[in-house]
Length: 199
Image (cartoon, rainbow, N blue to C red; front, side):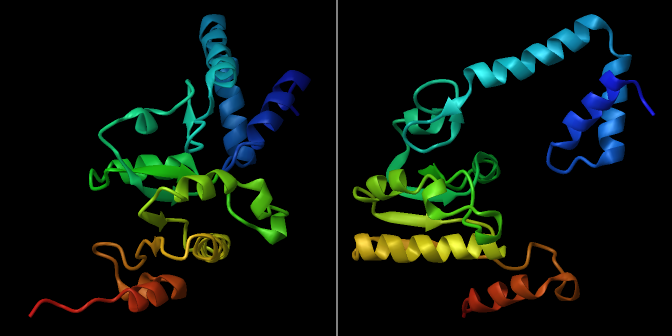
């Protein structure tokens, strides 16, 4: 049994995604070992995030101003919109260096089991942006919630803008992936997204 203050800190760390009891305990003990200046710097960083961060008024990504860096970049193709569930997906895509369009962050996925419905997501703003777009690329994950969200958005966009090109990123086996290690959904996508080999 730890002192009350340490138990409270452990409980706080446990609220973070992916942090179990032992990891939370290690984090809390590490904080207890730090000197007062280090803890103060840590606490100030947490408060600064809450004070400065906001959602970009255009795409919904996290930023410190009215617009994020990508939406502020005049070199970007604003007619192509890559739709993701969270800002971390943008970072992964940007690392490829293969995409020069803009993004739209839903800030979640439709999940009936969790009580997350379309009205809870950043969808109205996407509909407004889609009016001037030439292509909307749906890039939600291949989980049940991700697929549900993609199907919902495809129907909504098609019903609203029948001539708009709505695409879905291909999902399949990763480079170097082995068939016997892949799950059924990955294999199903790999099969449906197959393409002709060069002659």
